[in-house]
Image 1 (cartoon, rainbow, N blue to C red):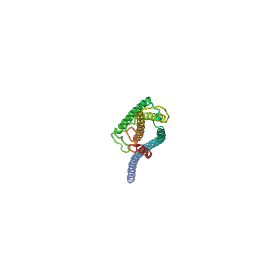
Image 2 (cartoon, rainbow, N blue to C red; image 1 turned 90 degrees about the horizontal axis):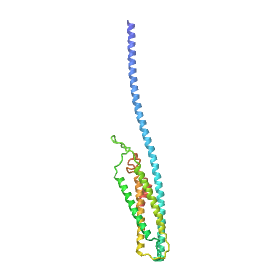
Image 3 (tube, rainbow, N blue to C red; image 1 turned 30 degrees about the horizontal axis):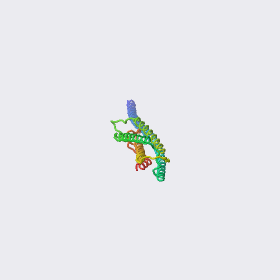
Image 4 (cartoon, rainbow, N blue to C red; image 1 turned 135 degrees about the vertical axis):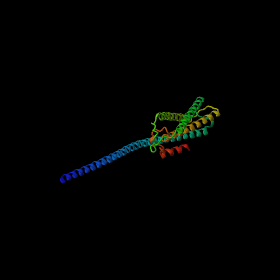
Length: 258
């Protein structure tokens, strides 16, 4: 009888040990599952951060390329301005030598053409100013550092940006064409004919206005390029309100706006 009771105690002890072992195993499995879920969440967050960094690197490469293109355009503009100034100075010297017998080779048809070009430039300046005002009036976008639970990030639309880029390229081509025509018109030539003094004055005033319009259009182009990195039409919303312009772009803009 005592031997039977001893075996029963051993069986009970084994059952208790087995129950405790199963309980501990369940706790270990639960803790393991929690740890796995936590690590999976961290891995997903790291993947998203790596993707954002990769996109940010591509964006900065694009911005550097645009800065390089802007510097090249600025250098070309400076060279063209120096050539125009040299031609104007040479023209003034020739006018001082020959007085009223040396005049610009511009007739009434050329004067009409210059007036029409002036009107077209004023219209294009108005369109660019309207586009910039529309970009300024748009609300700011949601940044990646402060996401909201109820709002989703809007998908970027490149249609407006592509339209503006096409328009700016057309503007640049028009400016280069007008500069070429203006250089050709400003080459001094000796013409033995009498032109009323009032016509020469009017032509010179129109040429001065054209040069001012070209400077204004160039300034608007630079302003628009600076807006590409910070306004709501930017195709890279994940950078938010972080500045996108390099110090070189800001210095060029300040130099040209003086």
